[in-house]
Amino acid sequence: MPNRVGEPQHIGGSERLPTWRIALSEDPGPEWRRQFLRDAQASGIFSGAQITVASRMVVFEIERSALALACEKIDQWIARANGEAPSSRAQSRTESPVPRARTILVVDDQPDIGPMARDILEPAGYVVLLTSDPSKPSGWEGIGRGTLTCSWLMSSCR
Image (cartoon, rainbow, N blue to C red; front, side, top):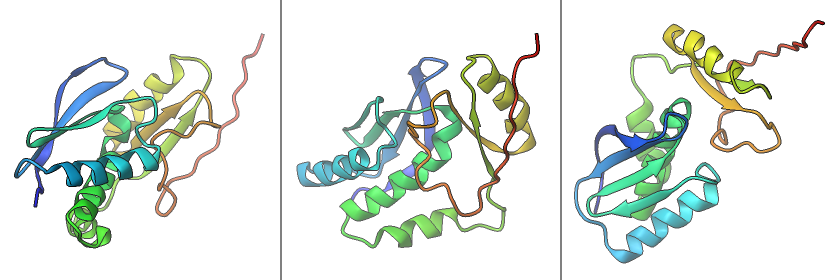
């Protein structure tokens, strides 16, 4: 049964949508691939982006700010494709003495604001998710418990 080996590696893509690779312990069979990709597509995390299972690896596109969440979900999908309870592997990977990073969702229609907020907040230890359209929550399903919630209303003054 394939298992995740190591952490994701940045292998290309654009600044906005990097491409990542996660190594697998072995080459998965066709049924495993179908189950894994079915779960990935059903999640909505990769809507508008690519995810594929290649020889002994998972290759996907996702914003850097959503990478930790994507890895958690990938661990769950691997467990499910292996016929395991999804929560058992995800818990063993995510439970650690280090507290989990808090998440901030930045919603702004100006393209410069989100990256600026990420540059400020990520060094302070936050996971920053960006969107310009809050009605299309790509990549932030499952955030909820333990999430830092902040609201700011800003308008331009003339």
